[in-house]
Image 1 (cartoon, one colour):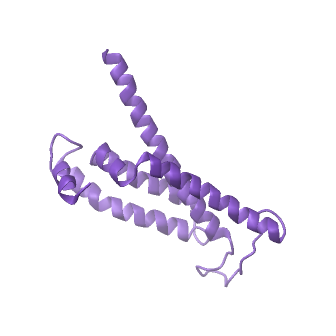
Image 2 (cartoon, rainbow, N blue to C red):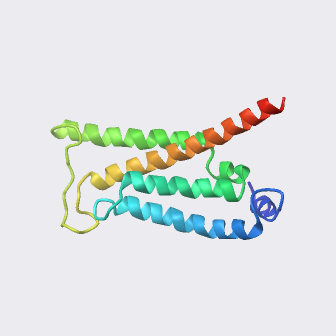
Image 3 (cartoon, helix red, strand yellow):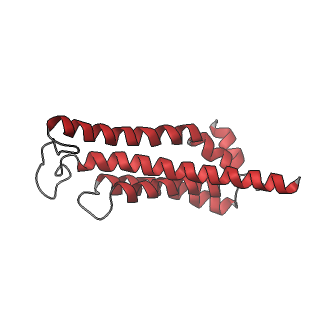
Length: 160
């Protein structure tokens, strides 16, 4: 979708919410995504991690779908890509586990532990957080897409 088409949809009062909500949502989506990645990356040092960060990432795309329109949200991150990244997240977590299995046992911490309280200080835990964050974010967004499609099917059946 081209920038002109997106701007046309954003300024169309018949699609999505009001112009004020769309403008605030466009600014907040970037902040929410940045915060979600922060929670995932620093999850081994602070409260949070892969699951919490993944939920925050899914909230950003859900906000895009609710405030702007379903069409824009699916153009940016379609159901195919949600399923793709969901599978990639799980595959990367399993690969991390099996690399540890080849060294000793499943999910063995085979990386250098680093220095305490630094970003590189937990071996495989940040890698596991990233893979879980990708999986949870994509999966929750895919669930929201599925629920929105199911709602439209029910409404069409009730109209007929």
